[in-house]
Image 1 (cartoon, chains in turn red, yellow):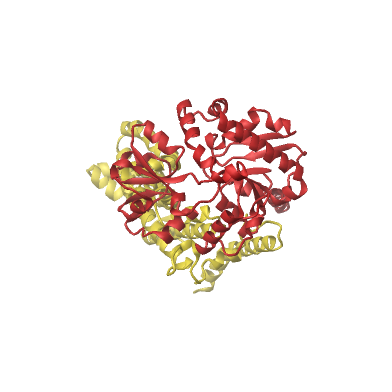
Image 2: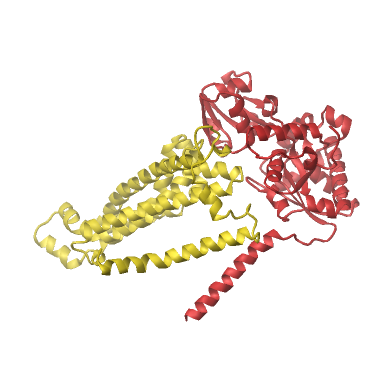
Length: 324
Length: 274
């Protein structure tokens, strides 16, 4: 009897350990079948990717792309690092933090040149700036572990603020002195539709502005399959160019995948995000382009706030690395 | 300590202790050899290092508090919510069980709804608790209560209903009223079952408290808040350390109930006799 029990335990342990090992190995894929892991549900912030599929850009470049929608807490940066997806969407600070921990992921295309994260509160409070909001009595709901929160703690006096976890918008609707983190292109639009007058303050205006909705891939993928990566980047550029010109057809596709927002909200959100995507920098260097200077600024900030404990070479974070 | 008791202590403590040593050493070796990335499974030594008093850690976002003191304060924060929730479960659960035991029709009508406390997914209703009770300790106590009240009701009820029929008849023969019957006969006889209920409820109270803290506890004032923040910052070592502390808290409640059981019952009930 004991022998059999020991045998079963050994087998189970072996299976469990090989499960760990599998997660660590590279998954073998054919050259053109790839997965793009999103870090939220299909929304206008990902419009260009679905547009690339719709206009046939992926097919044109011999790519078979499976877009994986995400949700709250989808660990896209780890998914790419572990080989569970060839490409993923992350925010620039996640990439820097993973590189500081020894991960090897590289950015290819930055959709948002201006970080769309903001703090949203009721207009009736009469606050005029982020500084007013952070230094006045009230409640703010945010994810305490995010780097921008550290940025606030280092640059503003938050003593009068009650900080609570962010778990969706319900308390916002019922409390007059409530504020919460949001994406300026979605929650405020939804709040206004429900009849609430909201004021939003972009976090980027306070000096913390990481690239957002950044397409990344694993460093080894870039080195071993440069043609694949180049094809993906070109398709994504074509997709975003098409989406910015006419978002409606792609919005219809995304709405079927994400029925929580209606057509009007999709259209408003798509319009609201254009100035954050098309800037002076992209007019010069192209949609989705990145600069060493901005990566360096981010790395310096994260190092000052002790979010990372070592220096990272900004040029190693993105490809193709440009001159400052 | 007599040799008999010493021997009993060793035979109960030593086997699980050896398993612990082997598993911890095994995990440490596997991760040190690189078979599993440290990002996925932190080494036990890294987790334990969290408890060593050290220089300020970025996670605490403060230059005064080190990680160990932050975690100890967080454990105290969770303990408050969990213990208060547990005590509320004991109080309310006992009253409800007594009421349900008094009348067959009352029991049939209302017991199915008590099961609701068992099955409602706390993580899903936690945001609603925030709407009703506002952020902070009340939500934690409410979540802890909801998670732990059903075992108290179920086990107390079983104990109350299981009183020997002959004894109940005897009480009736002597003209004892319902209150005297409950206080002097049914509750004492129900104690072993009630204690079983408390043992189960204790661990659940800690779980409920942490779920409540995920949605209502800001900063680093509780284990739930620490886990949430550490998770966002990919600090798996801190997450493991906080989970360990939460388990120890549940264990402490469990041990207290066991001690209480021994104290109350060792003189007269078979379950606590050596």
